[in-house]
Structures are given as structure tokens and as C-alpha cells.
Amino acid sequence: ASLVDSQVISLSREGANATRINILDPIITVETANNDETSTVGQDYLLGMVAEAAKESPLTAEERWALGTAHKGALRTAKSEGRVAVLSDVVRALYSPQDSDIPGPMGDEQKLLLERGIVNVNRVTEWGLSLALALERFLDGDLSGLLDGETSIRTEDGRALLDADLVVIDTSALPEGSLALSLM
Image (tube, rainbow, N blue to C red):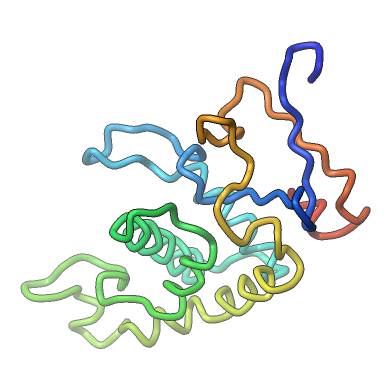
């Protein structure tokens, strides 16, 4: 890293050197021409990985749906509030999905699955409840100080250091064999 004049990011949970990486940071996206929106492919992958680690098992199709819609809802909410979405926004969205989060095509007035009584907001809440609880445990415990807020490592002009040509992350301050180390 020093040979190519790159800055090393040292991960730490404590004190003035605490380092937080937001897996929903706008730098972690893939630019596409999809209805003038930025795709969240990179964030979706990381969010799924963190959710599976929190749940300690692979996600079901229903859980993946709930997580994806919660992610989109978190991004919308944060954008409307003029800030960057963070993992706790996803948890809140998992706890309180909207009618728009119900899967399926639209009928005349509403989503067909809702219209037919197959899926409603309560059902989508059930799909995401175990994820919300597991992710909340991460935010309050296992990964507190690492993934629970906006990216704290920035250049002097405010850019996240995650967009450098070379990103070197020093994980030596994290406990060996810990979940935090394996995820980071």
C-alpha cells in the first residue's frame, strides 16, 4: 500500500479511531441505465451476505424478497430525508413493510396477490421478521461500531475512501476467528 501511495483503512470499534463502513454507501453501486436510477447490485450482494451471516443460514426466497424491498424502502426514506441509508433503515423497513412491498403484478386497483388474499403486509412482515431480529442483534452487538452507521473514513474533501484505486483494509484490531473479522 505504501509503495503505491494508498491509504490503509484500519478497522477498529473503539475510541477516536473507530471505523465504520456503511454497506449501503452510495459508492457501493453499479451504474446502469435502468429508469434513471442507480442499480444497487453491489449493495444487494453485501446486504444479503450480512443477512445470511446474521441469520446463520441461507435466505429463503421470501426472506430475500423482504430484504430487497426493505433495502429499496430504506434508500427511498433516506433520500427523502436528504441523507445516506444505513443498515438500521433496512431493519426498520423490514419491521414495517408497505403495500408496495407486496410481490406480484398489479390488478385493476391493487396487487393481484393482495387482491386475492394470498399475500398482505402482515405476511411480508413475517417473511422479514427473523431477518430484522438477526440484523438488529448485529447492530447492537456483534457488529456494533463497524456496520451500524454512515461510512466514517473519508478524505479531506469528504469522499469515502472506499472509492480509491486501491483499498487496503487492516483487520488486525478485530478478534481472530470472530464473525466481525470474517464479514469485514
